[in-house]
Structure formats: structure tokens, C-alpha cells
Amino acid sequence: RVRARPLTLSALTISFLSVSLLANVLHMHQAAMGIVLVAGAALFAAMAGIYAIAPQAFPTMVRASGTGLAFSLGRLGGAMSPVIGAYVLSAPITGGGLGLISMGLPLVAAGALLAQMPLHRGT
Image (cartoon, rainbow, N blue to C red; front, side):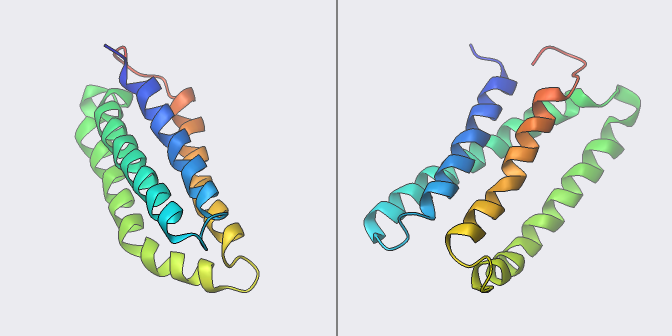
């Protein structure tokens, strides 16, 4: 068995690397589709890991409200991300590759925060 935190950190890393690599292969449709598949699978694995780890980051008394608030903000970001992504990818200054890499930066931030997060139970 492997603990959830290292698996989640690995999934976040794979997500960032694959999204960044996607910027270089957008013109090759078959390669781009394969990388999108890897990025999506790794991102869903990272989300599942975060859902498993997050309750251990909050004391029992604030677990419901703290976890609920964090997940609600995440859902809001998920709902807004297609619109924000479209603006970033179509902007002249960040269009294409730089836009994809900039969209992957929150994955790096999530990994850094997850690595430093104290947990109440071993994960």
C-alpha cells in the first residue's frame, strides 16, 4: 500500500507535466489526444487524492464546514475554468503554449501546499 499524499503529489506532477507538454504538441493531433488523456486521468486521480486527504487536514470540530467550504470554492473554480481558460488561450500575450503552462501553475501550487500540509492522521 502507498499513502495517499505521495500518490496525489505524483498525480499533480504528472498533470502539470502533461499540460505543459501539450503546449508543444498541439499541432500533432494524435499525440495531443494521448497527452490530453494522460492529463485528464492524472487530474482526476489528484482530485480523488485531495478528497481523501482533505478531511484529515481539519480538526473534527471544523471538518464539515472547512472541507465543505474548500470543496465549494473548488466547484466554483471548476465551473468558471472553461470561460477563464478560453480567455487565456485566446489572449495574444498568453495564447497557446504559454497559456497552457500558466494554467498548469495552480497544480504546482496545490502540490506545494499539499506537501507542507500537516495532517491529523497518517496519509
